[in-house]
Structure formats: structure tokens, C-alpha cells
Length: 94
Image (tube, rainbow, N blue to C red; front, side, top):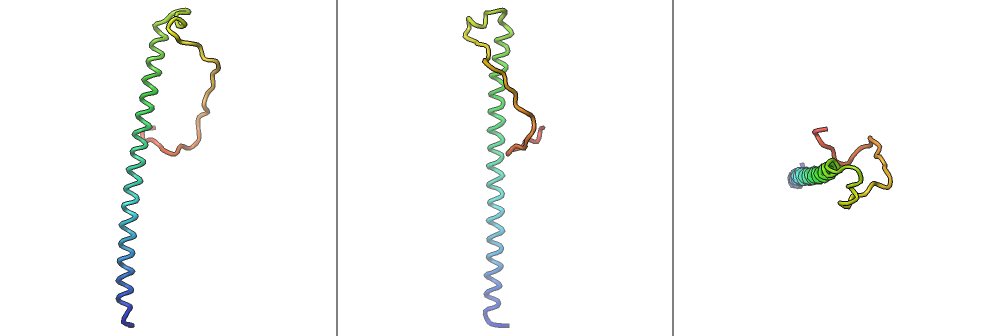
């Protein structure tokens, strides 16, 4: 065996271990980022749900044309979002 073989194998092992550790750190980092994004999405969904509930409660309390007196207006157009498609962030509770 040449004299430098052990040194090259040692450097190779150290490089592999360092690469492995870097990949573990990257995986943990991106898992944390995705968890943060999911939490933010859920917070915004709950804020929208609260606004919808408030809006529908206000409408339920009004009768006839009273909605104009509190500043509510009818929508100009109604559009629906088609169901389907893949999302970038998925939720486990679906």
C-alpha cells in the first residue's frame, strides 16, 4: 500500500461524515421552516373564519334592507374556486 492511502481514506471519511452532518442540519432546518409556514397558514385561516363568522352573525341580526344602514353592501359578483390541485403545504387533518 502506498504511504498516502491511509491519509486519503481518512480525509474521505471525514468528508463523508461532514456531508452527512450538513444534510441532517439542512433537513432539520427545512422541517422547521415548513412547520412555521403551516402554523402561519392555520392562523390566517382561523382569522378568516372569525371574520366570516362575524359577517354572518351581523347579517343574521339584520332584516330587510337594514344591512345598508350599517355599511354592508351586496357583492357585485360571485365566483367559486374549483376544488382540486396540489398545494405546496399540506395539512395532516384533512
